[in-house]
Amino acid sequence: MRDGAVITVDGLVFDYPGKRALRGVDIAVPRGAVLALVGPNGAGKSTLMRVIAGLDEPVEGRVQVCGISVLDEPRQAQRHLGYLSDFFGLYDELTVRQCLVHAASVRAMRGASAQAAVTQAARRVGLADRLDVRAGALSRGLRQRLAIAQAIVHSPDVILLDEPASGLDPEARASLSGLFRELRAQGHTLVVSSHILAELEEYSTHMLAIRDGRVSDFVELGGHVQAGVQRLRIRLAGAWQSPPGFWEAQGAGLRDRGDPLLLTVDMPGQDAGAARLLKALVEAGAPVAECTVMRESLQDTYLRSARVPEGSPA
Ligand SMILES: Nc1ncnc2c1ncn2[C@@H]1O[C@H](COP(=O)(O)OP(=O)(O)OP(=O)(O)O)[C@@H](O)[C@H]1O
Image (tube, rainbow, N blue to C red; front, side, top):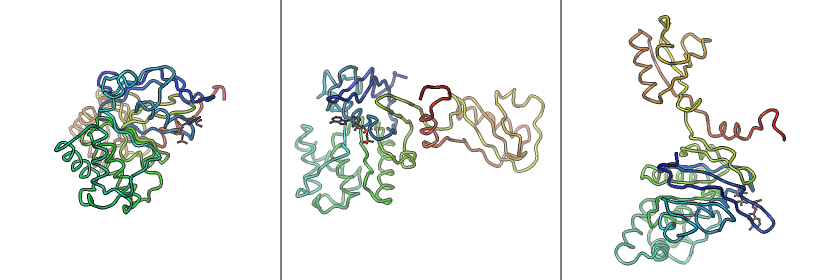
């Protein structure tokens, strides 16, 4: 899993004066992932982001971004990083263009390449038609977009966003979700912290749950019952009797026989396995009307990870 990881964190320990905020965090974030960073207030999410961004120095541990040590070569690593703090400020008197030119100059971009970066960043966040509007005149949602554009003006591989949707109305949140899906489609790796799980669900591929400075869960989101197995719900248009040994021959586990027209099947092999099973069903005369992969919601995953196993000390 570490092969192909764009962010790796090993044994990270971070202390504030009198407070240990991270207590040995290990993670490997695959390239192209959108990582939902979740956990209760005070769990250590913002601290983890700041340390990955090279803004705070840990007591122990290593952080690499695109294979570059953030602690040993912060400037090199930061070329691959964009970070948006939960409390960001904008220069309200500057126009969108001026804000972005400034952000580009902070990244040592000059001349034509800076201009091109400004135009591209504005287009990515949907502000291309507002380049001459003052930042102070933008709505809250558009200010958030401008702040993100500033963070990604140098087109970093990794984008860290700390509670980017806080304080936004539902419309602005939905539009931000769309932006994150676009950034993901463009190949960026995103780490997004939020307390609103339904929203993270819309664009996240992985969930990292932090509790009391430790990783409590790190999972790929999707229809995984166990590693490599999908739970399929297959709806039949009419009665069908499986031939003897059919499920065993497919390597599939039939779970629920309550409703003869609704089959729940655990099938290994991801989408290729599902495709093979559907072909075999149709060839065996099953009138397949619909097949869906049953996915656990991010909320379910999070709450499951939060549950203390029976018998564990409280
Ligand atoms: N500057 C600081 N000085 C001392 N303690 C701090 C400081 N900043 C954060 N902490 C403490 O470190 C712990 C982790 O804080 P952090 O802000 O990383 O949590 P978080 O998961 O981002 O929380 P939230 O969801 O409330 O934003 C908390 O107990 C917090 O009180």
